Length: 394
Ligand SMILES: CC(=O)N[C@H]1[C@@H](OP(=O)(O)OP(=O)(O)OC[C@H]2O[C@@H](n3ccc(=O)[nH]c3=O)[C@H](O)[C@@H]2O)O[C@H](CO)[C@@H](O)[C@@H]1O
Ligand SMILES: C=C(OP(=O)(O)O)C(=O)O
Picture 1 (cartoon, rainbow, N blue to C red):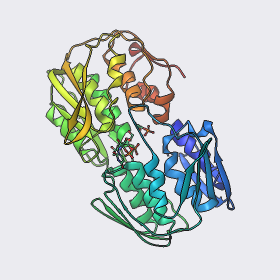
Picture 2 (spheres, rainbow, N blue to C red; picture 1 turned 180 degrees about the vertical axis):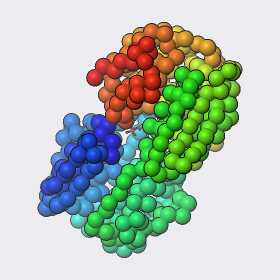
Picture 3 (cartoon, rainbow, N blue to C red; picture 1 turned 45 degrees about the horizontal axis):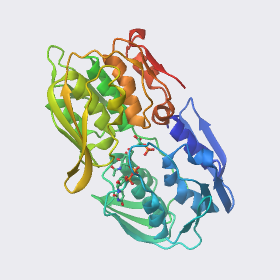
Picture 4 (tube, rainbow, N blue to C red; picture 1 turned 180 degrees about the horizontal axis):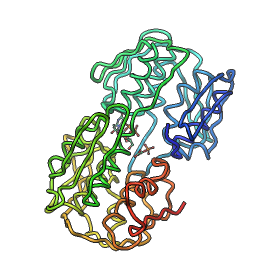
């Protein structure tokens, strides 16, 4: 497992559930053993501020300890409205009760009942919470309208491989609990991380190869690369994306959103690439987060043309649209950039150093470090030299 700060927050939360938590950062393994006896778990405001993904751990926390109190709201990227009540309402379908208090939220799970959960929108965290709750509940539960994100299918794959009665067919997941006592799993490749590095290669007009031990499921990213004229080669456990070298990439329109369409998480990388390496006008939309493209504004003082951002609707959903006029030979100036309060926007700012003449400094790397253990170090390993002046102030 990775050791980005988000993952480390989850490890800390697991220390409140298991007596024996062994995290070996060199071996990249995490072992959780000996659940603590029932009691009340308290998540401090500090812990809660570190990861929004803590929501995914609520079922396990309640399963072993019965009661959870947390201050505030588990926080993540600030990229638009992100209400979270539906995660707790999903748990309530399995018999949990929750209430907002003066200090935060109290959740309890004393009576468990199997449930039928139907998402009107394919919520990612909602799906993970529902599958985990179903697994801890004796009897047959069903999750309909589940997310189409392969990273979440991995949850089902891991459980099934360990003997759980869990099946996914399309957007329907059936679970018969209780699940197995022991689960062992090697975490699959981080798809967003892979797309980040492959984009870096295109920005340098070079090529990057990523290696992985299990399928890298990024078909929409591959399609985009092919559409704009990049070369993609998929081998046995490898994917290489290469810039054509002698010509600019082609402009194209990108409709990002909830998978199976082009992932919202990759939209910043596509926008940066199309603005700085493609010839012509591209329009990108995102139906998940209205501030998805906020990082582009931070690059204007560094020499990027001001993006034209507007609110729109795509298939009835509110969306953000950005129009970029590609300048394939642009050289940005770099500089100390304004903070960008989201992981992928921050990563895109760092990648902008690859098309800049001057140093690029990201002033507050909190968000970057939530999603990437050491992106500057990885870029250096790929051959990015000191000339690109990547600097992250921790
Ligand atoms: C579906 C989707 O693309 N989810 C993204 C979201 O996951 P995350 O799990 O954070 O959020 P959800 O998938 O639960 O919801 C995403 C958005 O969907 C809408 N919504 C959700 C549930 C619901 O019942 N009704 C509703 O309208 C809301 O606008 C919400 O903000 O952020 C992650 C981090 O960037 C991305 O990896 C996920 O791809
Ligand atoms: C938005 C992201 O994370 P979070 O949901 O934790 O804010 C992300 O991973 O890009």
